[in-house]
Image 1 (cartoon, helix red, strand yellow):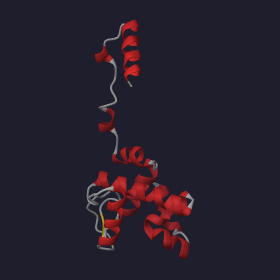
Image 2: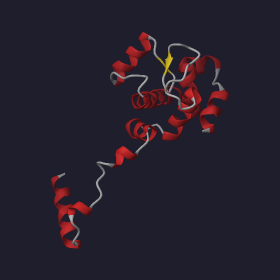
Image 3: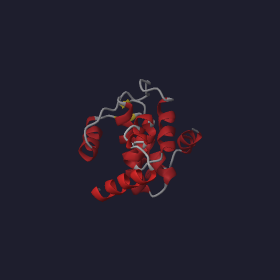
Image 4: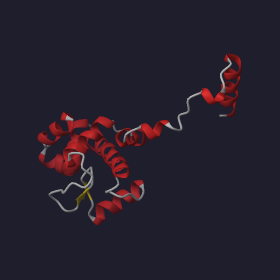
Length: 149
């Protein structure tokens, strides 16, 4: 890291740039959407995360879900057991906080992708769970809704 800093400073000196004119990446994350930040954190594409938010809540963090245990922008099922399992794996989070929920949704997608092996099945598992997908097959309407956004 020290070597990289020295090379950068030497380059600035040679080309005559002032260090203040070099764009910094420190401000860039502030301009990213919650979906893009979650993509960076989890590896799940922002398009899939945005599609899940659309399918679950039409982008409304306070949306009423048919199941009262489903919460927030991503409709995370927040039974005590599910929350504890996720918090143990990935850290404590608030399902009603859009950024935290986006990261958990991204982590869930990655876990479901490892279990099921296909992107469309991992999308369906957000709605059905991996066991539901294995037993009953994927809900195509849900996959289509996620992909439509």
